[in-house]
Length: 153
Image 1 (spheres, one colour):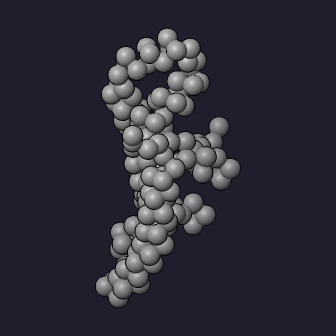
Image 2 (cartoon, rainbow, N blue to C red; image 1 turned 135 degrees about the vertical axis):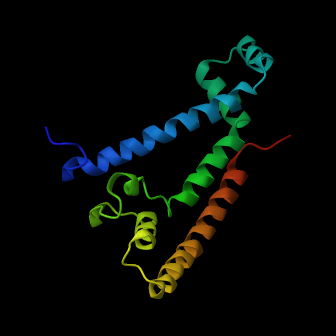
């Protein structure tokens, strides 16, 4: 058996699985903490009114943790442009170009011993362009999530 990171067919899937797996723990802690803030009396009253599990989830749980969901979606969208998917941890500066992300490219260029001060303006410009693209998308997503989310009454 070839190692999963050395086979082109399995490299990307393995790295993606690793990123999802390592981020899963934080998400579980944050969401369970948000859900623990929901009063048991609200859930009990809903059950007495005939609410089933699906209705409970969509009509009680989701609206009560919407702010946590919004934070995770907005932060996830913002980091989409700079995430290097732990490629540096696996490959250092020698990851194959087909695996590169924008975040890895920028980090790789800065960490490379071949990078000189003359390369910094180019890399800074790349960062500014990414920022000019990411900020409106992130702010737009935040606006939409706040507009579409449940309203406090």
